[in-house]
Every structure is written in structure tokens, then in C-alpha cells.
Image 1 (cartoon, rainbow, N blue to C red):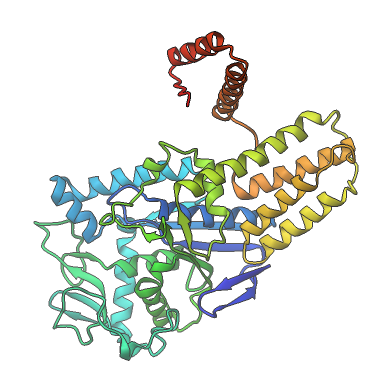
Image 2: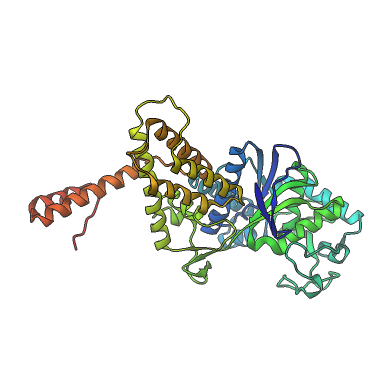
Length: 449
């Protein structure tokens, strides 16, 4: 199995630190608002990656952090006259609800930043003691000039960087030195006691404190969105490797590509910002999941109603094929199948997934099987084997290929609509109108055009 690592910029053979055990960390959300479809894209991708690794026999411990103290949370609390911690708990709960709806529910541990203040303070103390960090009047900062490899993940030269902070901080040694601890007034926002006074942690330090506590100084896979490479992931590497003296902090750095909406970057200012909750008012969560997995996780993905509608049709085709196979199985005793289209599908599906989790290519093998299927050439054993392959693919992709009740309702409505069209074509308008009126009474509206 090969995985593309952002750090080395190439595909590498998967080699684990502890035999069949894989430690996976993915940057979680800052919980000040509802999760959006960009979050959905990232967390569906890593949920599928975990599913496949476990299907291959690995034991995967998957952690996501929850950033539950941050400027955005504090600002949201001020805007709504609320407590920042209450805001964080509210949107953390809604985030997990959204992920469950998307079936992206394979996280083993959600680790809150505020539950790991002691570990954060401990890391900062050690960084100060080893001369990598220093205290100023407003906080504690990491001195990036003390770490020559700063920039290796993003491939940036520190000397050519401009400060990513909007507010210049003149008491820092370098404008790009990043905050480990922020001194704050306990009367205006949540703070915790520390050797440097009341305050709260910087954004980057929470992740390395959490991963060191649960995984140790080095682990297998770190994931997140492409937008987190700099400065967030760069800072994580700098902190942890400065402390441990060991490299790499994570053997594989995996990043999901950007999600655009109708060809444009998703933004509230462009009025194209879509939350997962808004999306699921109009679309089935499995449709969105299928849409996400129809593009490679590293590639950019363009969201539109047309693309969602196409995903819905494509998934429906797989579901219809699955149900047809299932309904034609007559007995359950299975023997090896030699059905060539199935053997090709199985081989190509797993080759695609072994090649950096290439879900679109894996999905295409299912359609190749459907397109090459001939009911006159298959035995009962072949049907059983096809169903087993589709069940495995369903488990890996996190999509149920069986029609649920809402799917059945849609098929029934489609059938009724087709019957009405036939009646109208035969000028049986009275019966056609009665069906429409009865459907209207049940809450379904049909417009004839």
C-alpha cells in the first residue's frame, strides 16, 4: 500500500511504527459555528481512510482535537452575549451530530484543548528550558530561528516569509515567531493559571500536546485540510521535533484538497457558504458522501447542484444493481466464483485503494462490473460473490447500497409519476388528475408542464 506524504512530496510504502497498529491524528474543528461542507469533505475522506486500513487488518487509533478556546469562539460569545465555553460545547455537539449523519463516525477520541491544559503547559515549559521559546510581556513565543528546518513541510524559506499575523507584535524577536501561550485578562475571557500568568494556549501547541500525550513523540499519520499546512502544521512539526530531537514527528502527512462552490472559493462574503445542516435539508447524506469520494482526497473538488444530482443518479445505479443481485440469490452455500468481470472488479478496486486511497478509481470498477454484467452468464455462486464484493465496498466507502425507506419512497413516487405520464399520453386526464389530487393531499406536489 502506498500513501502520498506532503512532507516528502511522493508516494511511499506504508510502514508502521508498531506492527499492525496505526496512530492517526486529524486536525478537528474550531467550534464557534456549524461545520461546513469543506469540513465534511475532509472528515469523510479520513473516515474512509480509516475504514480501509481496518479492512486491511490494521488496528487504527484515530484522534481528532477539538479547539474549544480561540479568538473566534470568544468573539462569537461577545456577539451573542454568551459564555465562550457554552458556545464551544454547543457547536461541538452539533459538529458530532453532523458527522454522524455523514457516517463519518469512526473517530476513537475527540480531545478538547481545554482538557489538556496541563500537557500544554508542560510542553511550553520544556521548550523554554531548552531555549526554543521565550517569554514576553504578552505571552510565550517559539523562536523559529532556533529551528533551522522550519518551513520544510510547506517548502517555504523563513527568511522570505511575511508575518501571517494581522497585528504586529513588536516585543517578539521575529514577526514570524508564533504564540505558545497568550497572557489574557481573566475578567474579560476564559483563562488558566500558568507559570507566565493567567492566559490561554496558542492554537498550534494544543495539537502537539495532545498527540505526545496519547501517541508519544512520533506516530504514523497526521491529516488535515490543505489550508492547514502553513502555519499550523509547520508549527506543530517545529514544536514537537524541537522538543524530542526526533524526525519526522509523523511518518506521513496527508492533506485533503480545497472544496470550491461553482468554481469559486467558499466564503460568506461571496454568499456561497454552505453548512452541512443546510446541505442535508435538500440532499441525502449518502449522496454527499458519494460525491466526496468520487474525487481523490488530494484533488480539488467543485461543489454544485449539478454535481450533487449526478452523484445521486450514480449512487442510485449502484443501489439498483445491488438490490437486483440480492433479490436473485436463491441459496447461500458459496463456492469460488470464476466470473471474469467480478474478478477484474475486485482486483482493480483494491489496487486503486492501495494506491493512496484512490476512491474515484475504486468506484469506477463497480460501474465497470455493472456495465459488463450479463445475467445469462452468472451462476448463483457468482451472485453471492458479487454481493460479497459490494458489501465489502459498501463497508469501506461507508455507504449503504441497500435502499432505505426514503429511497423506496422516491422510487415509488417516480413509478407513480411515470404511470401518470402514460395516462396523460393516452388522454386519460380524469384518472391522471385524481392521482395528482390524492398525492397533493398526502403532501406531494406534481406540476404538469
